[in-house]
Length: 390
Ligand SMILES: [Zn+2]
Image 1: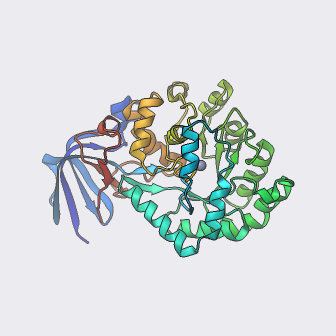
Image 2: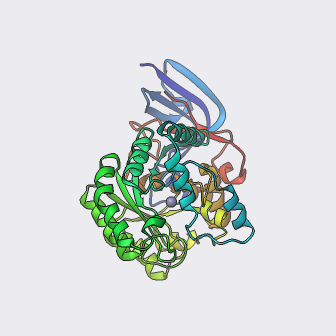
Image 3: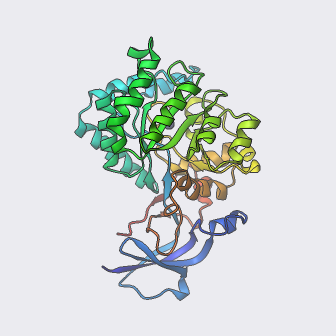
């Protein structure tokens, strides 16, 4: 196995500095740096002038290198298109979760191979924008068989697979919601748990299609009993019990967090549950952006992810999410990058990814720019991509 020395790195962001320090300290920034990769792992990093010899040498020509993005929230296994729904929202229609059934119909009708091709294409699209790890949820099958096959297909491209049978109550169960919860926590969970690491629920009492606090608790506790760790969609459409439930049950993350009371913020701040912010959803639904400063000032652990899905946020771009977080949510570029790497890894309870560290995986992204600041400074410009290291 040969070693590769990457030189010409104007700025290396390791995200592996002092977590209690300021922006720059936490990002662990080195200028005029070099990195040696050996068999897919980082073997050495430091000042270019001290770089050891290697079998192959690659000059990056003054570009910057950052940890590959960790996209800790996506729904990549779907078929169909809901562009018309997006256009309707842009001209005044509200989002209430009801359009999910259109994607369910299209996804159920797609063959395994068709879904597989769609997912692989979307993962490639993410890599082309610098993402090296993605979490993928089910939730567009909503039958035992369809949820299990979605998870099997997701597991072909990532270890971070999440069972979201409790995405919405299918129309056939609208008159008997308890029967659907029984299905999700019974036969569906039994068929799905072997293919998943996580269980998730759309806890949203403000939508007739989603699950209230008690239904969500039942789903999460059943998932935990089946060996899955917990994630929650909470407080997206209005105030609700999702955040408090996630904290109480020790969920790794509660995502959206668009409508938070002071008690919700205090609960998050005193917990190990990460708040996953998804500003692309606010962009695509015309909902108010989360005040990230309020959360950070309270000591809440904040991650960023795309929520890539066909209904409320059809972007695969972490750089776009970072730009929105800086422009609309009050985060500094450093806080946004940290949230998109180390903290999104933390929301997946992964300490091995989201940072560049000797001995760790060489999951690196390269920016066609001299500094990570350009991620927010040059929105919409495709400067980020995964650095081929293997
Ligand atoms: Zn989601």
